[in-house]
Length: 240
Image (tube, rainbow, N blue to C red; front, side, top):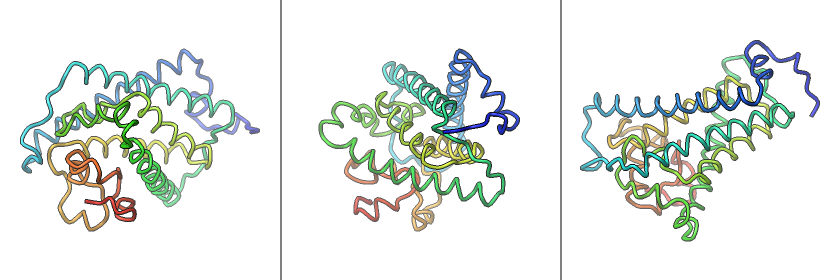
C-alpha cells in the first residue's frame, strides 16, 4: 500500500490535493454533465437517424422515472467518491501506461472483463426475488426513452460501480484507459437504449451488443444479458 504522491503527474496531483467537499462537488458536477451528455446524444440520434423505430412508440417519460434517474446521478457520484477514497488510501493505484497500444489493450480488457461481470450481475438481477425488488422498474420500459439507461434501483447502480472498483483494485489501469472506458460505457449504454437500430445488421456477426440485441432483452427478459458484446450470451446459451 506504499504510495509516493510525488510520483503523480500534472492533473492527478491536483485531484490528490482536493478536499472532500471539493471531491463531492466535482463528482456531482461530472455526473450531471455525463447525464446531460447522454440525454443530448440520445435526442440527437433520434432526430438525425433515418432508420425505422424498433418499437412503435417510445416509453413515456414519467415523473417517477425522472426522480429515479436523478438518484442514479447521486449513486454514481457516491461510487466516484468511494473510488477517490480507495485511491487516496492506496487500495487503487493508477498505472502510468502512455503508449497507444498499451491503452488500447487496457480498454479492451476493461470492456471484456466488465462485460463478463455485468452479464452475471444482470443475470442474477433477473432471479425472481431480486427482479421484483430491484430490476423490475427498469423493465417497465419495454420500449425505451432518453431516461431508460438511468432508470435503475440505487443498489443496481452501486453494484455496477463496485464491480468496476474491484477491477481497479486488482490491476493498475491507467487513468487514460479508465476515462476512455467510462466514456465508451456511457455512449454504449445510450445507444443500447435507443428505439432505433444504430449499428449495421452485419455487426451481429462480430458479437457486438447492438441496439437491437438489447432491445430484444427488453422484449424477452430471459435472453441477451450482455452489454457490450453477445459473447457470453452465445457461450451460456442465452442469446437471441
